[in-house]
Image 1: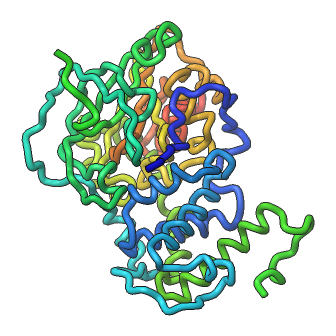
Image 2: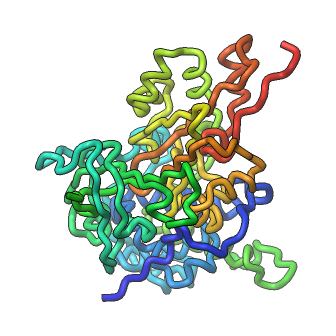
Image 3: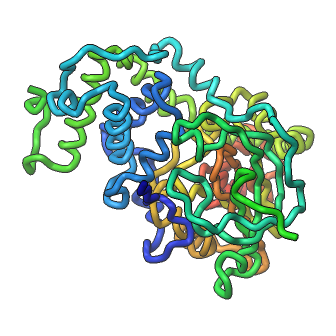
Length: 220
Length: 208
């Protein structure tokens, strides 16, 4: 199995300044709002979950060459094809060549406000007590994993402190692989800048991530 | 042919190709009955007109004028924000973090583009860009300089990397000299960037 995350950018150098003057809107081009709405609408069908979407997007081989919504369209096509909902020949032909597969739900115009307002909470009943408490010192997992994960590379193996406890949430590593929700306790873990970046860590800098319980071990 | 609907100044330009590709996808998904094209329009319109940073600005202005609401916002942001009617997708689990004289908060998503949609709308392009995502966690003062923001050297900086489904809203400091202003007037001072942490709120007019 080979899984390469292309999207884990935190702390990488060489990208230059932030273009905040020329890139201030949400969209570059007229097709981009359509791309956003297509992804959102297809998300409602229940054919996949948000972690599967993130997994497909972050592992696109040409990730760094694509604009944001180009990734969404490429990712959406891949999800549709992988699920068998649409064939690549149908996309190429720009029309349906085979009958549809059943989907759980189709987003109707009249339902959009309610669907947007409902959202999709990831909070779940906890099946076990939280292993960590506010103030605990923890070390993040150092090992690489070959699947979707939400532990950024810059925090791997680093020592931090539990700052907030958010309850049990759907575990994206499992959810993205179709292995179920497997809820785990979620924590805000805060690191000193110097722990993450060594000598060059700006004084007075701290960085936090939100991390699931299995991403860390207690430091004794 | 769909091709005929797209004038191309330079043959198949990048945008033209994406236009066609999205049009093709939309057609196939509609024919299959997976999407309702009218729903796409309502989704787009929602984020163009109804769900954007003015919502967040109303939250901040309320926090500035109402100490009870401010405490609620800092303790249970999801409920406090919902009381103003801002709820739902990509804002299911909200946390508000307050700037003070000694602490400045900055929000990023280094792994993708997580952003609090109900209060800020869809993220700006720079928020999703590699330079911001790469540098915010390591060199926030450099990033702030890109935005024209310089903080005192003594100010501590806290970065919130949105790596789960928790979404962060920065509560900027109420500008000096704004004591005379109404909640509505204060909301006008609250910029989108000040609620991400890459900016500061506007300053009040000198003449009340």
